[in-house]
Length: 133
Length: 133
DNA sequence: CGGAATCCAACATGATACTG
DNA sequence: CAGTATCATGTTGGATTCCG
Image 1 (cartoon, rainbow over the protein chains, first blue to last red):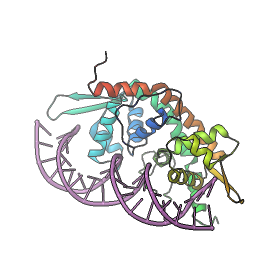
Image 2: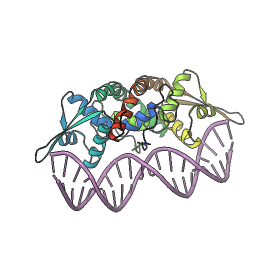
Image 3: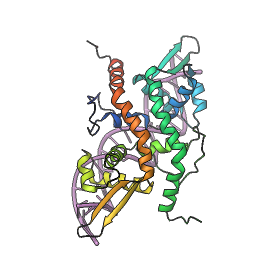
């Protein structure tokens, strides 16, 4: 993800704007763990998922990066955070309506990836000079 | 974009694999200039676009990064590169069929971004404690 | 014209340790 | 349990320069 300059103005329709909405969106969902977090939360929707549960369902994510990722999503209004004031505290996350709506095009991208990434791998293999037999 | 380990095995259907197709795809289209290059090429499809033309249509891109971005797309089989052996040389780029198919879900993501990024900006403004009046 | 090579700064991520 | 703080590191992307 590139850095986030302080709330740049969104200019609708001009996708070639240096701060075009598409690239700013990709700056968010393109971070390492965001798409997986959204997917886990989308599958649980409209239910909630706790922090530890998310961590278990996203292999390889560190505590810090999951925390950073989730708070970034909360800040963007894509995820809602609910804290049970118990000891120890329980923190629950769920997709907001906005987050759920984002999951629609994201799911399409997932489908494309599952269907076509093998072809990208093949293309890379050929570029690497790997024989095809 | 994170680095690209040497052609990891694509395991279909397991989106939670650390090397899941979706994240590997996002590692590619999530780079700063990729989505814009794909969009320009998609709009010109099935026609070709020359290097200088691409550069003009993508404000802010450096020569180096456009070159890197395009070669990465070529390597992935998403873009085809054609060189006219003239002096000086003319280099033309176009989306492959695979690239065109990727533009479908990508266009959906663009639409979402244009329609909803303003709400993400609002959410950020509220998080920053900016008064809403 | 369309690069390639180099250097460099900024940032994203990760490991580790600590806390309410 | 669910963080936060700090430090270490690799990568991305940009500026510049040179080339066929």
